[in-house]
Length: 436
Image (cartoon, rainbow, N blue to C red; front, side, top):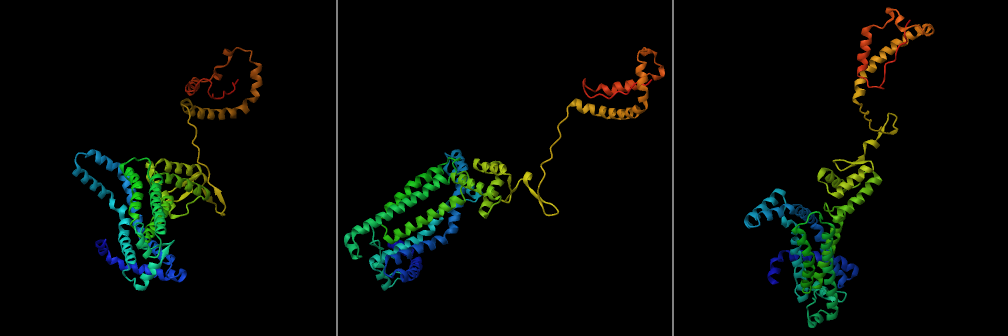
């Protein structure tokens, strides 16, 4: 451990300085020698470190999702070059380079915390052995050795003997109970964090070896924390329990507001988003616009949850735009008149019914018939006086009519040609009354 402490000695002084600054604040509230002052100083150190690591956490989320997206392609490469490990590694590296993905990005938060963890461990070990370290002088060292958290000293471990525990002013039972509870809480928080990632924020439509690895880690990590936790001082257990709770809350926020596409969390999020958008008719936050913009850009590649979201908007008369906004559909779009009154836009113009072939052919006949009927109407008034006479002389034979009154042959042939395209029972040209 001395070798590891020497490797991280460059960060031991800054860590001890931060703890002392927080202790000076909490010491005025709870007392300088209390466990609350020193314990909250460690908790504040964790919160400060995790806030600084938020950009790395964002990169971790993006890297994890990119790895999930690449799993089908990685599986194809493994099957294609299963007998050539070198070519398989080359193709994997080529795939990572083309997609801009780095597998180590998912480990960045843990790697970045490692120096702070070992520095804190070295500081607490110095408190347990009575050695000044960093900016912790003799008076601060004595104050830290007297600080107890629920009866357990900050520097005590689960594996310490009774003599060492009594030298720190505590009983072995108190130390074992407090450390055991903290180890269980630390392992349980790690298990729940990994479990909610697997059950809620994983694309269930793609079955890959990556999912099996994550499922295995869900059980391996808690066991590792339990095994190593019995060798950690109480102050380090406070550090890891705080960082696990922070990770769990941070991940719950990300899963709720920015879920992985195709996961159960996305289905729940889109259901909430649909209700909000349909109630208010617009998006409210930038994150909502970003997700809607991504869904619209996918087009035909949308999953079942995203298609259901678009269909729900359509049924409500709303349309998702390419920039992530939501507007009313064309049938319900409101327009403003010149006097400022909002009116609803007219419905779409209906297409005329398609005519049959006979109706299209009879179009010209109807036009010709209409012109002839107009001419016959004008002659009706002049011939009205002759109708009675023609009826009275109707008993005469038809062949007795003068030749001049017979209809011309060309006219009859024209009528026959005009009526040749008409179907039986179709619209006929009105006949003009016979002239005598």
